[in-house]
Image (cartoon, rainbow, N blue to C red; front, side):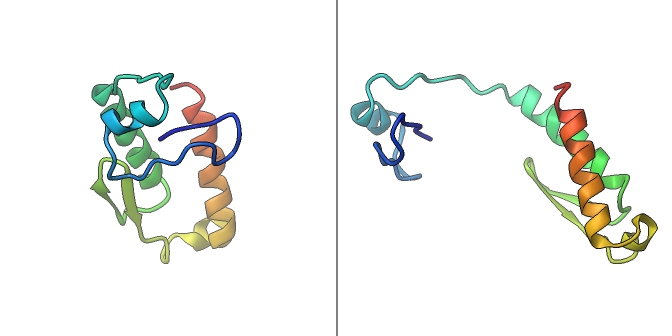
Length: 96
């Protein structure tokens, strides 16, 4: 993903690779991926979600399906559950 000082200064489509990105933006800084950390964070995220519903499954390394229809009432309602989940994720992700 390219970021620019001016919004929409550069355009890069998802199917374009690094070579094309560097042609568009030669000063682009590439940062290597840390897949071990990514996997670790994904597992932590899944475990937090499981605190809100036992009906939680990992769909991919960065996607989770949660069925909260039977647990939302334990938190008051769906909106309160989501607000609490968001707050917890924000708090715990600050330490990652």
